[in-house]
Image 1 (spheres, one colour):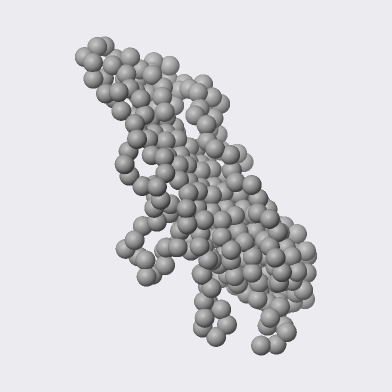
Image 2: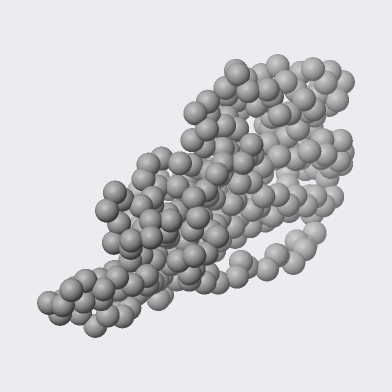
Length: 313
């Protein structure tokens, strides 16, 4: 291997934090007479941390620098990366590198319950935590894939493109390794469910699922649909010159970004925040990782986050 080939081989680390809050719309006859409240709410938080390995494509970068219009000629779904790698990837001469996914998961579910359900008394509705889960551990059954490529906005032809300037987009996916297709990643942890008899949370003797989402950032998604039922922000590298310079002469590159998503599919409204910290280096030690996300806390019935959501334009 020549020096240029060695320079194009990059290692690094990615930390992905996903926070999601979903709540159902009131039914026509909700248990709580004040129907401004949501009937139920679920918060979920997943943190994924892993080392990665991959290859840069400096010749492609040089072409883009010489012919800037080439960045936007390909369709949004084309796989023409300037960097391609992940936690399980082919190295030179057929060998592979495999890194464990360190996954932490927590969730809190809330809703209205009839605390007199088993007593024979008239219904008495109370807003409570109906479930709680948390666990963390290693996941060797699944892997993260990362592709960084020129961004061409997908979508609705009636919407004015948001990206007149060239940008790079992170295409991040997950997947099950073929040899583990019949297995599930689980870990022991806190697993509580509401018990109508005891009127409190009770432990459930089941492990917690530590699987990862298989779609984390998809450049094929339009920013919004015509009906306004969803919005989808992308994880974008906006300083193209800085990233190009790194790919041609790699030392250390750090990307931090957050994308917000919203869906409104009756009867569920969901808001999701995906935050990514990506470090790429050619050689040497990785810088210290970011702090993990804070623990989830129960929401009160009149919390603003339980109010009807409005998609942001």
